[in-house]
Amino acid sequence: MPATTGSYDPESNLTYWGTGNAGPDFDGDARMGDNLYCNSVLALDADTGKLKWHYQFSPHDERDWDAAQIPLLADIEWQGQPRKVMMWANHNGVFYVLDRTTGKFLLGKAFTTINWLGGFDENGRPKWADGKLPQPGGEQVLLYPGVEGGTSWYSPSFSPRTGLFYVSAWDNYHQNVRKAEKPQAFVEGGVFGGGGGGGSNIGWNGGNVTERKEEDGFGVVRAIDPHTGEKKWEYKMTDITMAGVLTTASDVLFSGAHNANFFALDARTGTELWKTKLAGAVYSGAMTFSVGGRQFVEVAGGNTMYVFALRQ
Image (cartoon, rainbow, N blue to C red; front, top):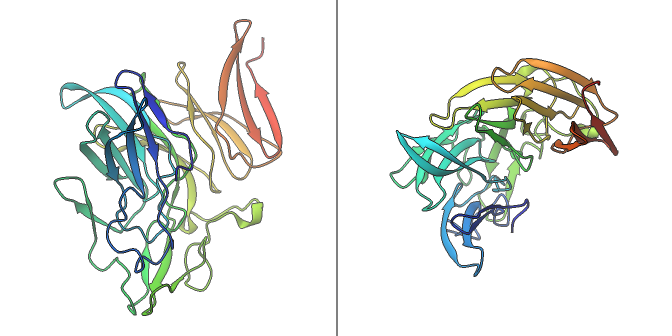
């Protein structure tokens, strides 16, 4: 089922929704095959609900890489021609560009550290890299990303002014996984790593602020060129992030972090323009509104709502 809101294209009258993973989450032996429509984006006729097309990001998922992300729609130039696209940074660590009218696969490229992907076939179906798919009774496998993925439900952004896609992500995030011989059994290195299997120690940590080493995993805001999937700039943090990204017509980007930082960046370069410490972690996306000709930015930090504006 969907975990976040979908998107709507009034021109085609299509609405787009991401779907969750199949269960059991980590053992696919009881649900063989691709598990149709799980871990997918569905394009539905807004009047009838009829399925027009779908694309499955992670067929037969055993890593809890659900498609709980928000589809971002834009009209861009693609290989010299205007094209209506959907951009999607997925839980599995891959950034995708699809034709939002037909569902045609256009691009898939890692936006965070991954080692599971061995490429795509001509239809955009992902292939697992050799030796990275855990086998029953096999050896423990080090996988990037871990169960929390490259990104999750926190909203991305696209700026038609800069032509860049922006996403909050976790990087250097991994887990050691091993699949047991009997069905319905799955052993891994802790939900957030660091336990038993020697995975990364990145995670919620009970809501406590943690300054982590870069090799342990870190939060980051990345700007991506949707034509190539290449990173244009990044803003690294010393803690994880579950904050959405807001970009404005003045080329300012707002986001936050688990350690309660709320900050503004230059959307073209990633340069930090301003930062403040809130009373609690930022797990929301900022919003902006105007009253009496004055612009405000609002965000939740912990259980408190904050509103900011330039000094008059």
